[in-house]
Length: 152
Image (cartoon, rainbow, N blue to C red; front, side):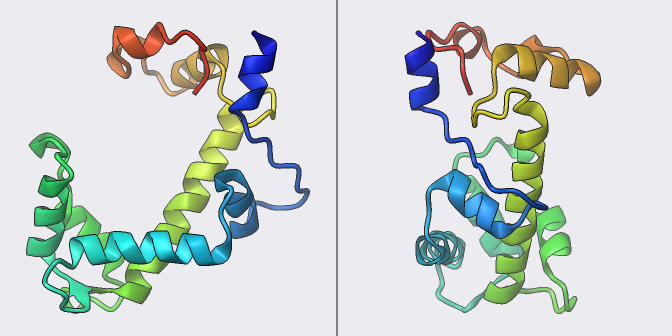
């Protein structure tokens, strides 16, 4: 079982402060692959091929991703991404947002990955949720909690 656990994990063994290089190593992506992934996501939202995103495009993209209405934050996303406050999100603004979010998520993952093996154990997740004042059952379904491998 221990062999199964480490096969899906991707520990990043790079010293120093967290950087985009850490994120790339964790995602097993090159800079070019990451650029293509982010560009594809931007193009998905920019279905009109306008070269920018506005509220309607963001809302339509979230709907196309089947994100439940209560989790749709098109206005919030627009406000956070739109650095020059022109009511639009161009690719560079979107890219900066993605950089910031991926670095933030990597830092959170590292804080929860208490064994520093590239995996989050149920115990590590439970401890993090307790520290955040959340219960695990309010976050995950019973199926997710009873996963046969037990790793995230």
